[in-house]
Image (tube, rainbow, N blue to C red; front, side):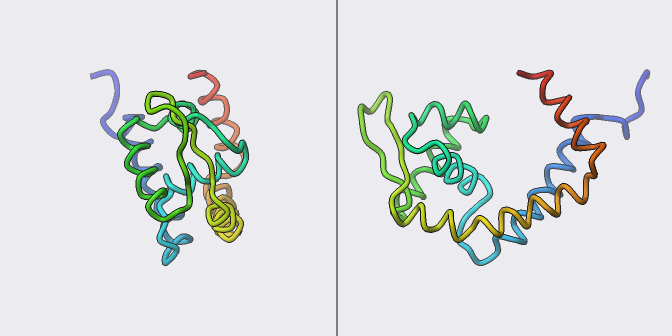
Length: 134
């Protein structure tokens, strides 16, 4: 065996992902929103109206995961959908925009904790690693 089990990049990335998810969950506790839902809302807050498929591509979400999260966001009247069934456009409602603005400090706190946990060298390495997939 050329590599040691503890060197497995996949396992290490999943463990890091769980640690990062825990930071978001801690900071979003009691807000009735998941990290994926927040990511969707924040993307729409930044870009405005967007095709649903573009959200999946940009956030690297499976269509089923995006659909499930959007259904919940629509039920909460945070997002609306329009256009053809095969190419729907989604956008934030006034309530959705207000929620994002309310949650921004919690997102910033999460990002600060994550950047502090990882450090500058790891962030730069992550940026370089990510460029290899684009």
